[in-house]
Length: 165
Image (cartoon, rainbow, N blue to C red; front, top):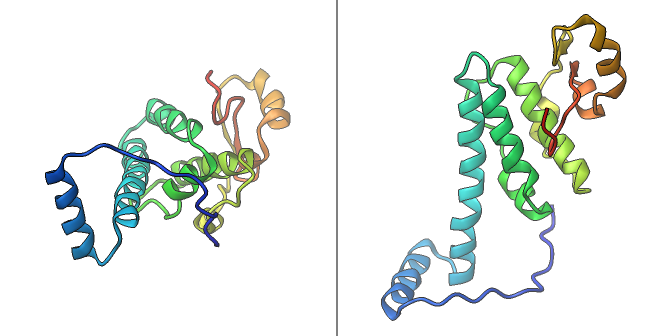
């Protein structure tokens, strides 16, 4: 995927010692200072995505962890989202959580008009439908109002990325 052109500048104030330290670290990594700093910042978003996904994997009822992931993904620009979700989560996920995370990422990418990362297509959709409520009277509503990214994965919910129940 081609990188967008660099058409903006960011300046930060640092001490001489900090600048020297950054230059030394960048040189050791074989990078210029800008590339080195960007690699550190963008890696942080990816690591935060990984941590939030791991938090949802370790819970019997992951709704709070998924809400945290929702908040994280919703506040991003297209480039930030692309960088954060470029790689598949490395933590072992249940089929439901894997599909829910993939659907959230796909929905967020569609909302920002960017392609979803290829790893989301490798997550096999659920064989049995999963509904966001146990109330049978709401299932028809969920079947008809769930966002496409979730419906394709056999997940039927009413709120998505950026929304709260």
